[in-house]
Length: 328
Image (cartoon, rainbow, N blue to C red; front, side, top):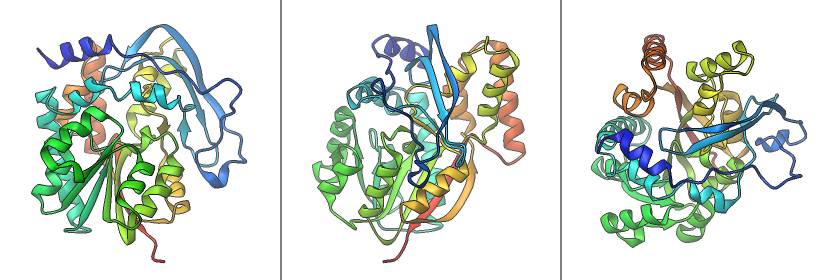
């Protein structure tokens, strides 16, 4: 069975999340800007959903933006609804359930570990959102002592088999604090994870507590400076809101946050983490081809053109960030 067939089969069993309880007002994800009223960027729904690369449907798009930080976000779904977004098939696609993606993912994770080693060549590492343990495997291969946590019980079961029960925590960053204790790690990695957090500021505070003084955070997340976000925004505006597919694809339902570089820097600093390095991180062509070129010939050709032009200009869809816990 091919990758697209796997996605189509998986997508049919996933429920779409809805917004937070009625009456709850959106607030800036940046704590110091909670007094600033967010503005509505998108507010529409379509009869038919658009499926993300991981098979999650997006029909409702209700996105807000903090005007001071530039961070965009949707109202977080309930934790029960969030759990639906990390069902077994989602983890399978990240791991052995999709061999094509697994091979491409291992390649890019190895590159990221090499990048991390330029700042800290060894140490005790917690991979937050570890999924089925691919990043932990690459960290171990490079000489790090790897631990993991994930909200998926199925993913944690896979990690336990490979690394042992003492190396994995089922739950979020708060659960990890309870399991591993304060100042337990030299490094914490978050590979395309922070955008899934129910509360980004709270998660970063937990991470600060889990780190030893002087410890490092290495995170990768999509960036609103990506040409693909701009392409989606412009396609919606130029068609006066009639063409919604690009917006539904890139603002897909499993992501709660869509970060600007300014907003992410503010969140880190307000969590006691100082920026060490920030650089563009494009998807590898293998990952991009498998995950994103799943549309018609014209759309695929347009996306490929934007991808290669962006690479040539030194840009990318995401950003890599190294930050350090401030000494106390």
